[in-house]
Amino acid sequence: MVDRPKKPLALATTPGLPPQPQVNFTHDNSRVTASLPTGESIEVLLYGATVISWKNRFGIERLWLSDAAKLDGSKAVRGGIPLVFPVFGTAPDHAATSKLPQHGFARNSRWEFLGKSSSESTGPSDTSVKLDFGLSSATLDEQAKSLWPYTFSIIYSVTLTPENLSTSIVVTNDGEQPIEFQVLLHTYLRIDDISKIQVTGLEESEYIDKVDAASTKTQSGAITITGETDRVYTPAKGPSHPVVVSEDGEAVYSVVRDNLKDVVVWNPWQQKAESMGDFEPKDGYKKMICIEAGSVRGWTTLDPSDAFEGAQTISD
Image (cartoon, rainbow, N blue to C red):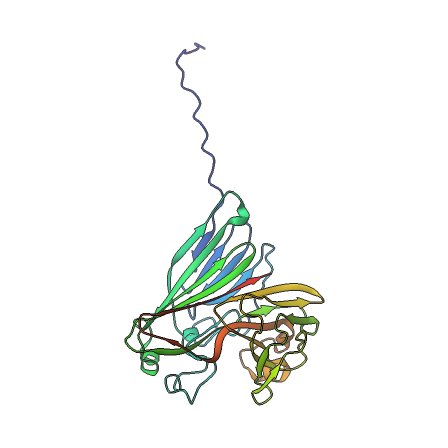
């Protein structure tokens, strides 16, 4: 074989790009899934922009979802993170929201997927993915418009990192009159055994006990769940102080809020769980606790052209 003096040099190998977050739609465009190279994943239903799954890198589910949850858009989802807006519960004495259904219309509306963004850096643990969803008076169905005739837009963002899940909401008043609303991130956390749960970070906080005639009380020590629990706390230590869920003495969740002044702690217990048709299995109350960041004591007033932003970050 003749040795060519000017034979080409071997092409330099191009190093492969590091693994990227993956975002996919289901075939019927009803939900969006996202996963990180490190293994964490989320699933968001466009109906209600409801986060229905959050798994850690080991594939372990961190959110509780009822076996009977309706995922076809026929009713609000029982479990995951339903979005409560613009009213918490019902408010028959509040003129602007008195005609709205329980917990408002956000969790019963189809949201638009606005796109994704991701961050990559040299270390895989720095990778994250953010999914943005939109709802506005222009895209609201006619029935909801007639019940709440205000001009608004909302961007709801769901951000997954290897360490945590963040959900944030930005509400903008696009109209010419003030808007009054309440907002809540109705998060169902999955646990192993409710009898072994303690919730800390709410010590010395005032709360409304909705199971005891909406009486006002003050929390003494850690919260344990021994029966139906439905409490609206205004944490004494402010939104940046974590609310921690511990199981058998080990911290399993930490919830930090941004500009959401209240925390609802909820568990239906046996009798109420049995009365809810979409709550399955009926003893599922032993496997969940709701720690819900929101602004629901009183009303948030948003003047024309102003925006409200609130968020929560859940670490496991």
